[in-house]
Image (tube, rainbow, N blue to C red; front, top):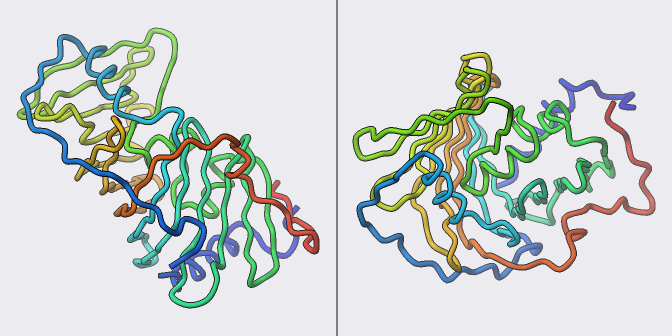
Length: 273
């Protein structure tokens, strides 16, 4: 249990830490053989065909590594971040802050539905279940792990349910798909007709929009497509993330434990509720 800090104090403290982070050794030397996305007219026979086209562009077994420059804007101000990131679907993530000077001071991992955070400067280690509430203490979006990883990899959160229905139709130079569950709209997706890349998402709950996402500047890596620029606007958390990737690399990790943070032997971890 967290005894000395409540959730608000932890989140405020970490925002201050992340504010001063602005290169790191964890992913040093990342590089990508990138090619431009070709521009050609695309026609979709159905919304199911459009979703299949999107799915083919997203890495499933590969790990995406990159350096991310992030501008986080909240109701409390704007904060620049620079992070080294590893992502793998459906729910693996490792993040390391890149400070201007000195060694990294912030590490975060999500592995086997467990969230771990290490603050070397404070000699503190936090761990617990990777719930949206716990993740929101350190990542400024209140979404589940699989949705977070999908968004950061340039895809849409997979939503399954009974009585799912799809409606697709052209909208200017885009193809729009509305996804409904039990008659209620859950998501709207926009796909560019020029290259078949996912351009934007809106996610709803009870007909209220929770957040929207925009994907830009897609590049091709090894048969897959990754956006270099992502903007996530959370209505619920009043937060906007502008993410710019560089040095993107696709790798095949033989052991997923590379995502897992180990508790240092001299530290007693603190547990989330």
